Length: 219
Image 1: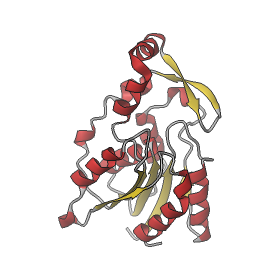
Image 2 (image 1 turned 180 degrees about the vertical axis):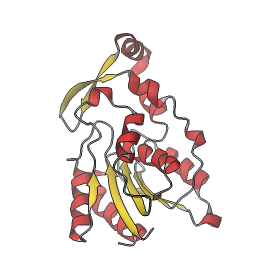
Image 3 (image 1 turned 120 degrees about the horizontal axis):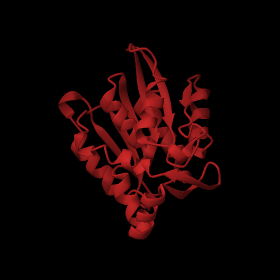
């Protein structure tokens, strides 16, 4: 696999026009490299699922003789990890505040009353940062995500994680645990975790993120 395709997966309720996506796409372009930024909303955020994101991304993978580097932000990071588990052409991961154990961190904040209402009515209003408004999300998002057991993630491959120590959405402990469990020096598949003085968005760390990606990907 001499050629490499680079694909960016944005976060939950975000978009291809997010600050990080645009910034990184521009940095890749300056090196005459194409960073393919997918729209995981597909014009139908209401019926978003992890399975749909996996299928959508896999559909744009290049031929098997081209390696894939996935750059995933938050829920896009979790998506990237599952893609790496399923598709051998994924040879490298860059995870930005990856949403490990997403439901375990998110659902308790809703509270039992709101969660039960969501399950009963089928939809929950969620603020979508890309659209800058509330959008309905079907409960199928939860049902689908519950079918993915992260303890079954067994593959080790070169992985760079950048996570904020003040992350208010996904605690940095989630990335620390993943890094400790998935590094395999014997297979040259170290998971490198860079802890940044920032929150979940990492909005003030774009330059640091790019510098780390340049080194990690040998750009």
